[in-house]
Image (cartoon, rainbow, N blue to C red; front, side, top):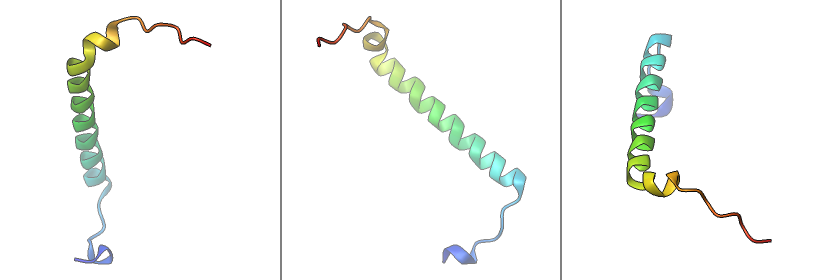
Length: 49
C-alpha cells in the first residue's frame, strides 16, 4: 500500500497511537534504568582537565 493510499486519521486515533508509543518508550526507559540503575545512581567522578 502506498503512503498516499492511507486513509486520513482522526485526532483521536493519532492521540491514541501517540499515547501508546509514549507508554512503550517509558517502559523501555524504565527497563534500561533497571538494568543500569545501580551505575546511574552512583556519583560520577569529575572529568580530568
